[in-house]
Length: 284
Image: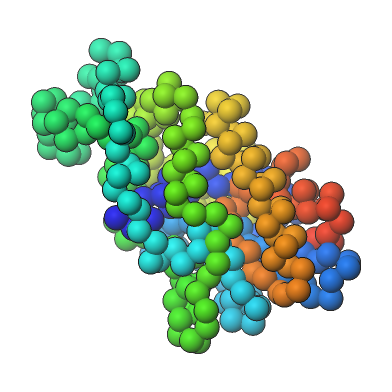
């Protein structure tokens, strides 16, 4: 299973605020002669509205390297074992009402009765169930900006992308959430499953007009767990800053990460400012 599964998950938590509406920023350490760049991505978009601006296209092939959240994303495989529990079952943690809700969904979307669902998913991690819910509700034809970048590099016979982290580390983040938080994500999505596609389209519309503040405002309504926000946004941002500083020391890099990591007090742009970087929005 390729990392499309992870992209589905990350795409719903990849937006935040910025001081000026722009998806592309020039970043420069005054002590270095080279400029680098950060582009805020929407990991998955439908084919009809896929956005890949000319300025971004030019940068992909002109910088020394392209750095994504996960490097060589189109060839990254998820070890199936990482999606399964070594012991126990999260199903035993569900209330009767939660179990009924999950089985009702499985009957419609997976064509499984209760016994079949338990047999097939009793050892699955909640993350896998969460991904299946999203996958069944989103458009069938999706494109990835990250994969587009890698295809461009391959065409130019350049090196593949490098990564700020690995698929294993991203899955470990989800595993680090308390089990009740993981179950809550599933139940929250099931309660609003009919609006998954509607919310996706609205987010995409805001992204296409680069209205990152509106995207942040709407999506943050769904993130009520402070620990989740810390683990998936703030903590990762802080770790990335150290890697960005090292990677940009002697070369020009295009970083492409979920747009939600750019803005906010603990966002990448603000953290770079604190490190002495000059950041400049680029009009697309």
